[in-house]
Length: 328
Image (cartoon, rainbow, N blue to C red):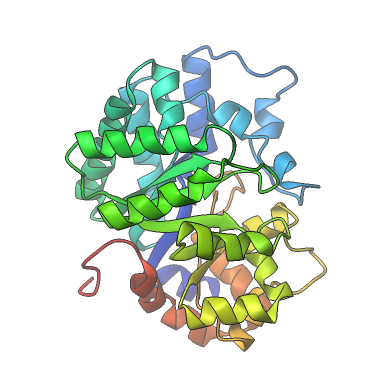
């Protein structure tokens, strides 16, 4: 398959962060317009994009030092969501699940979590109507001591807003070496049971295969974000296969975070061999000066499997948290 054929394929996107999807040119404009104080030593021209493999996930996340400084108003949020949807539309994406932590949006704008979630849901719904792309919102909680408190705040806002259908799932993200209070997993399980929200967990991105089993057994994960470490364990791959738990594979991001060494085959090769379900995603394409098509191309370079690319849209629909996609 050539690049143009791949670009024209209908696509779904199941693992992408809002602030990693918006054009970095838009981010720079908003930072300058708001006269935001940048972290000491942060160079907007150099440090907002990650184009070469980093030495750690922490280094890869450096752009978030400033991505957390936008948006500072509802109008700015609208510009960010619009830029994100233009990116999706250019890649022939038909449906998307967008991740955002919302808590930072409330703190940045000195508003309640309820209001911040209302802003984001409304802007996503407006963009869906305008661009004819179906979208769901996944609420992200960061690992650490505040994870339970933040999850409770998000779920309270979700409840207070009448359980908007745009919200489709929950996510745990952040440094996998940071421990979260033991109650975090039970809160995810409770939310899954009470609200029928699906769960995806960033796990196994930094080589800790035990985080994948924890995501399954302690958090009730329906999907695993990145999950590259799964290839280290036949038992874990069997677990994912037999429970039909889909891995969100992000080929370009996995190389840039050094979750996958540039000189080594991507673990997706092992997933294929062991019948582990997976979908191709882009994670933070604008940060990479990339797009979902390039992740497809990177997958094709690794596997030479055009059939997997042709089947990918149906797999993305199967494992999406958005209901009612079968006719789209």
